[in-house]
Each structure stands twice: as C-alpha cells, then as structure tokens.
Image (cartoon, rainbow, N blue to C red; front, side, top):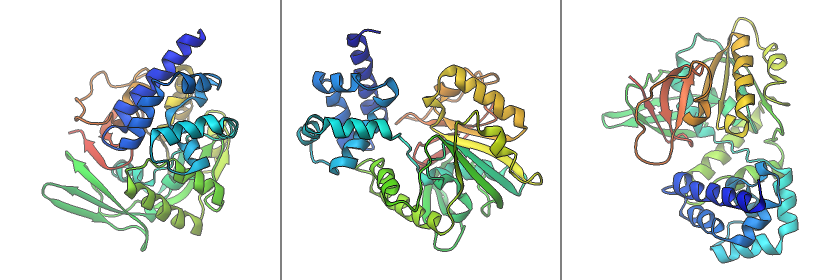
Length: 331
C-alpha cells in the first residue's frame, strides 16, 4: 500500500468514526475526528505509526492523556503537532483498552440463562471491570415500568433501556471464579492506569466518567485477576483453573475487531474446544465470517451501529449498545 493509499484509508477510518460512532454521543469527538480526516499534516503523522496504532480512539485518548480535554480543534491540532514525540510514545505504549463496566447490564440477561454457579473468563479484559457483574446494581427501564436488580450494596447503578422480551433476572448470578486475559493488563490500584482509563471516556457522556470511577472503587476492594497473554495462546491454560463444578463462561466486548479474520477463527475454535459457554458481544460484521453465524439478523434500530450479543457465535440473542445504554432482545 502506498503512502497516499494509507492516508486515504486512515482518513476514511476517521470519517467513519465521526459519523457512525461519535455522532449523537460526543459532538466534540465527532468534530475532531472529521477534521483529522481532512488534515494532511495529521494524516501524515498517523501514517508514520503502525496500522494498529492509527485508531481514532487511541489518538483522541492519547492527546487527552497528555493535555487534558481540549476546547476546540485548533488546540487539539496544536497539541498533536507541538508534542508529537510525546504523543507518539504514548500511542505506541498504550492500547484502546476501554473498560466500560455498564456493558454488564447487557451481559446480565444472557448470564442469567446459564446454569449457576458461574466461572467468568473475559478476554481483552483491560482492568477487569466487566468481570464484576454480581457487584453492581441495575435499573432496566421500558415503557411499562422499571425493573431493579440489586448486587452488592453500595455498588454503582447501571441504567439500561430494555427493548423486546429481555429475560430480566430477579437477582445477579452467583459467580464463584473470575479471571481475565489481556495483552497489557491495567491495574485498578495504579493511578496512571486509572488515568488512562478515564481518558478513554468520550466528552459529552458525563455519566460514563462517573460509572467508571464508581466501578474502579468497587474493583479496588477486591481486584479481579487479569493475566498477561494472548487471548488464543493463554485461553486453555487460564480456563483450566476454573472450578469444574461451575459453568465456564468466556465473554468479550469490542475485542475481535483488533484481530485478523484468521485469528478470530482460531479463537472461535479454541473457545469451542473448551466446551464452555461463549458470549461474544461484537460488531456483527466482526462475527459474520465465523462458522455457524446466523444467516439472517433483524434490522438494527436507527442510531449508532450496535453490537451483536450471541451465544456461541451461532445463536443471536440481542443487539446491544456499545456502552450498555440499551439492549434489544430478539423474540
């Protein structure tokens, strides 16, 4: 691929991020991403990075990590250009390890369908905040009312709009074991790691910042174990540590998009070889090439592109919001 082609591809990634992901959620990031897409000097800087380090989320978070939340594109652009060496170092060292604990609200109905007790294994776990669904509280709302589920007293409350026949449980599931796998685990007791997590929250979504801080407080009381390793290579060894009397559940959100299609297929085969329950929550296009993927899906609701929650990569359960704001269960 020529330099011109690479810049054009990066520009399209930023335009797509602005329109598909940031629009309706973060006006500031929508503007920043759209303007980067038309900025040859910034595109040239990004072109000097490895392809997996040119992501909009990584650039936006890294600038925020260095300089805080900037008021407009002029200040953003100046920071990128004036501090390019520092910025490049951060982007090379860090990953887009968004750890949105409210995704537990869209995971919980699927977990409740499985035989308890549960052993949870999350790949791409970041700091492990989504390994704690039993320690949070939930409020599901729909046109006819509200359903509350109490986890640990004092835990944050995650509000989620329920669409369709969501099988809402009466209580949180019993979890007897939990572990995560990540290439670069983050530590909830480390102030710099927590700062990086906070920089991955988009401006304009104030509730996300509060949820993250509350979930970190919960996790610090008893941090989940997240082992360093590749999600394929480390899977069997980590899964073998789960108690055999529990239902092993392998799950993840927004992880497989960072793998090649071939590596996704290897991961799917590795999970299925375990005989575990598998709950992938990913963009539909990320799962579509896997063996057994449903041939037909319902049309998604208008708005930002949803994730698809499946059981085993074969049974489509629901469309979900990437940040846990709603779940649309299929009948």
